[in-house]
Image 1: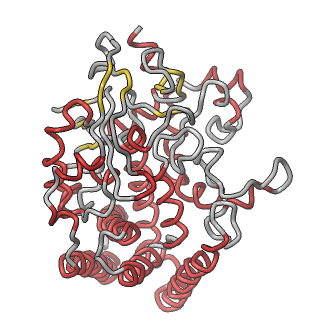
Image 2 (image 1 turned 180 degrees about the vertical axis):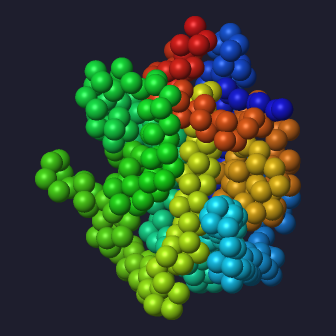
Amino acid sequence: MTVTTRSHKAAASTEPEVVSTGVDVVSAAPSSPSSQRSAGPIEYPDIKTIRDAIPDHCFRPRVWISTAYFIRDFAMAFGLGYLAWQYIPLIASTPLRYGAWALYGYLQGLVCTGIWILAHECGHGAFSRHTWFNNVMGWIGHSFLLVPYFSWKFSHHRHHRFTGHMEKDMAFVPATEADRNQRKLASLYMDKETAEMFEDVPIVQLVKLIAHQLAGWQMYLLFNVSAGKGSKQWETGKGGMGWLRVSHFEPSSAVFRNSEAIYIALSDLGLMIMGYVLYQAAQVVGWQMVGLLYFQQYFWVHHWLVAITYLHHTHEEVHHFDADSWTFVKGALATVDRDFGFIGKHLFHNIIDHHVVHHLFPRIPFYYAEEATNSIRPMLGPLYHRDDRSFMGQLWYNFTHCKWVVPDPQVPGALIWAHTVQTTQ
């Protein structure tokens, strides 16, 4: 098992507006939450230094490789769906038939998560060197999964631009001690006293986690849940119906710039086309069959999406930063690589295993991510975060322990999970 955490990471980006020269110096602490935390200066290599350590070919996506994976994943999805449609209904035993459908849903969810990730590559420009081709393939892949491609692309780019920023990050910005009781949804709409009384009860935590996994993606798309307070492009105002103006489906949403409205409409068009396809399919095979064949994988896919993103950016030893202390370098490396074995490498296209380098250089295609990671890891040393413990085990652990952040007494301007401070004092 490898656990390399509780230190800061170097950062890099190909985006001109975040290129930095020189060195960032902050305080660091040791690599285990159970160890004695200590302070000391640590230097971040600049972007060019990290970039120069990676072979040039890692920045050149190959259209034929990317397209081959795209075709492979769609072939697996349609092949699996056809076999399920043709043969599972023939199983005479009701328990075995239900079990076969459940197994199908799980397997199809894995395959379609791979499609989701390939469309994600398109959104970053890592699928090919051709923007139009990336957008066509990404729009097809995400629309097939009922994901608004351009809407997600724009908000996800801002997540990369402001990762770890307590106000401007677009994904999984943690609660602070001051505002944690204001997050009514996270507390299941219990009052402060009741929420604090029951927050550590296992069954309550399990209910919250299930809701987090099954509805987290939809809540993000509809209401910008988990985004920072300063992440919007314009303010909707307090009170009233302002909370309805942050949807990923509305062209004039506060999440987007005016110039992006036409692309949000194109995203919606993709969803409507896919909705029509599903409606027509239901006229042929019935809604029950469409639910079993399609909507099972929909919830599995977005369970994996939420879990993957959450665990990339939630670890008891990884910082977030306030607005005055945040830099792209610090934020981009507040990211954790994890291990998901065969599935992570061959179905999830390395998104779990090699995500740190993806935040440094999002245009590196996934099939070069391992090589790029190995190229920069010796340079980064303790700045690189990896946790090889059980992925699902860490989902439960982090969800039940990482609840809100407090200022890190060792690192001015940085916030760390309250649980970490409590266990290391």
